[in-house]
Image 1: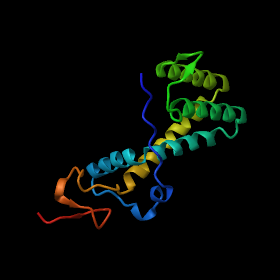
Image 2: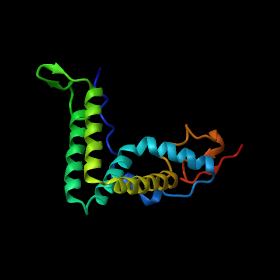
Image 3: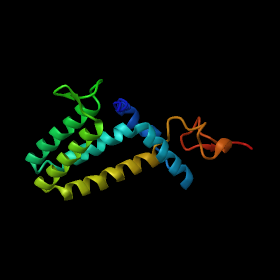
Length: 165
């Protein structure tokens, strides 16, 4: 089995947090379109932001914080920073075995540190952040993929003006 593709790099935070690109969508379908486009474009930023929220919920639990930081480093090293397969004692280890091991390790860490509530809260807060940013931010490239086709002209104004038909 081949290694997964390298992770997408996070977009510049200035672009991600640009207040000039925030506006209300004109319809529910435009809100859904913005959400999908922004999620595709900014998903590494959303993942890092959600991880930060999770780690912030672990501040009152320093042992859990250190443990989950180590597990996160293991995920990054074993899945994203290697260019060739992992070998142990001259045997190639399958990616599914590595993933299974890390998932079991994560589950044991969650059970041992009893941070279920922290995970639940951080998932909710992370989802709210992703939804709000995804809906309120005008996508970077929307003209050719707009669900409304050429009815909306969004080149000049992030909210879009109706084009003459």
